[in-house]
Image 1 (cartoon, one colour):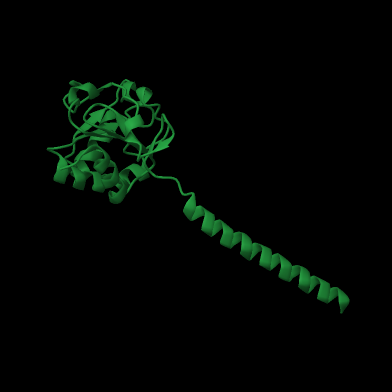
Image 2 (cartoon, rainbow, N blue to C red; image 1 turned 90 degrees about the horizontal axis):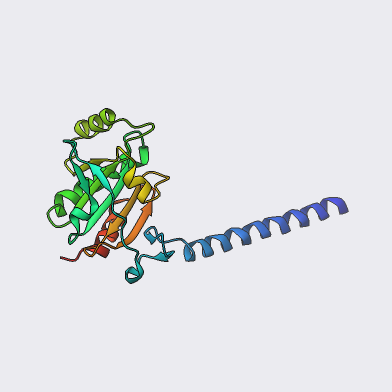
Length: 190
């Protein structure tokens, strides 16, 4: 009987400890959830755009094989997205980019840069875009110039670059329409 009572008390203490740890985790995780938009170079959150680093210039190729550089768009806000056709998270965010492009494509330059090396080939990337009926501007990083300039190691990755050429914020991983709009609001005001 004494043994059962001791086991019961031990079990009760364990349950109370687990419940307390769970509640503490829930409380602290809300407080310390990182901002999905951050400035990678300075480690600051997206609210400190004044400390943003200059966006690195690069050269990619348009669908006709013409060279295009980021610096060609200086003076216009830029949404720079790195993606690949085999990347499920990339595919999941593209409808939101298409909607934003349809709404703001005249005011904001969208650079949807396909990382065209390794697993990705030009034909599969172009087939994916045409079969999905996306109309946003697509560019191909055939020489890894853009990927190297931005240290891309995961897809998708999105940068928000202001009119003065500063990388105000970035997001690694798929983003939704709300996060995309937050980034756009950092670089563009109507």
